[in-house]
Length: 184
Image 1 (cartoon, rainbow, N blue to C red):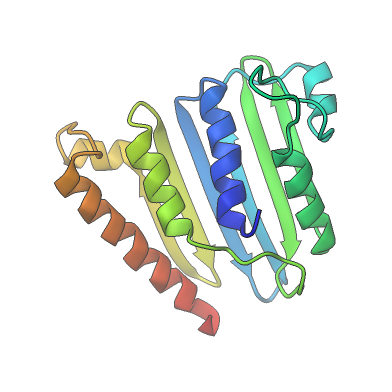
Image 2: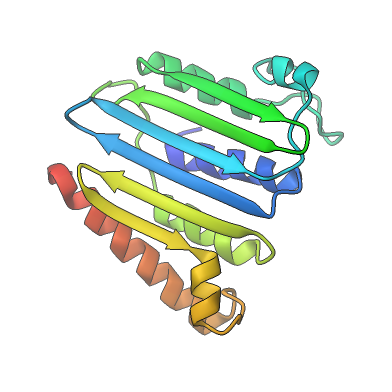
């Protein structure tokens, strides 16, 4: 995958396929600590210890539509190449947490990519899933909760054209503001 936003999309889609109704996506960039971390937490079905022990194997997948599962192995490889690592924790009935860590200044760290489009796409194409999103960069913070948005909109769907358009601009504007922190 060419950028981190595509990894976020892939891991979140795995969460949704595992029955998640709540997904939290966090991105934390700290120049002083030279860290870039993203975490995805879900309330999906979770994995058994046996399945969890095999998620790093590219020739293992629980999907019947293909014989390989490259998402986690590719994410782990990019994180390690950039001086970081990957942690996956899960238990049946408790959901899954995926945490990828990178050295912020590593030349091997993929760019973040169009994370605004990724978050927007996840929200409007998965109306039954509640998302929480948090992106912090050197003190600049953007937080979004679809539960709060739906409450403000009197439970209307976020996928209606007018609302989806406004949401896309809202996410993109706030991501630009966060990206500007630290001179990026």
